[in-house]
Amino acid sequence: MEKRFNSPPEAAAAIVMASRRVLTQPLGNTIVLSLLAGFYIAFGAELATVVTHDAAAHVGNGIARFLGGSVFSLGLMLVVICGAELFTGNSLLAKAALQREIPWSKLLENWGIVLLGNFVGSLFFAWLMVKSRLCDAPGISEHAIAIAAGKTALPFDVALIRGIFCNWLVCLAVFMAAAARDVAGKILSCYVPIMAFVASGFEHSIANMYFIPTGLMLAEQAGSSPAGLTWKAFFLTNLIPVTLGNIIGGVVFVAGAYWFTHLRAPK
Image (tube, rainbow, N blue to C red; front, side, top):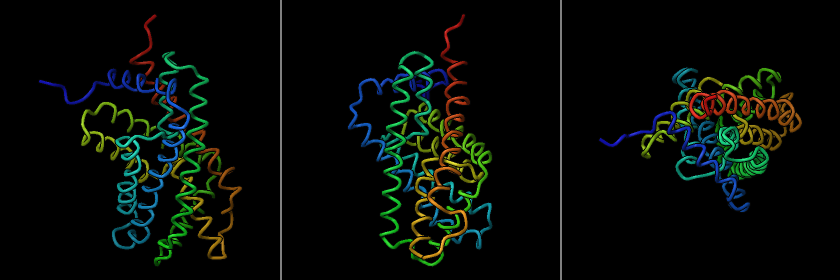
């Protein structure tokens, strides 16, 4: 009987082989795919904002967070199934670098291009959402601003640790999707870990590239911004520690751990 999924060593090997794309993929393709990933994650973040803006009042905070995580998982489903270059998922390129299938310089080059592309895509999507006036519906704008303010109020070390937890789960979702051999399996692989990280309150750098600018633009539009919600705080207080945490979570706890256990040549 045909196997319905790849074993962990097979999934690890498949990720390494897929990582070799950075050696030949045209720059234009990488840029477009990174912009798309920014859009896709923003779709999930926007949907989570709409779904959770009044859910807690009806079903309680825990269920509201579960619902937010459930719909946010749309973003990674689009990335994995439709194809896109997502910075957090590309932490798994480290597995190929450790295996010496790609040079570390190529990994860093990819990360730089993809991070910038994800940022531009997310920021553009945030601007479009504000201009669409969909956030003007009762309660949504206030909720979006509160989300952004909460994220910029986190201490550096707290944001860093939440970033580690987040990308640990995101990269496990990508690992599981590599193990799945059909679309339904890939959807489920994306859903459970992503729902878990959002419901838990962990921090995702690319999602925050939508959440915080949206809150900033809506606050500027309203003419009143919560204390601490500034563009400077977005970069220094949230984006830098969360990005560093995402790298640690993905590289150390997923790429490095599974390279060591499944791919490292025995001495």
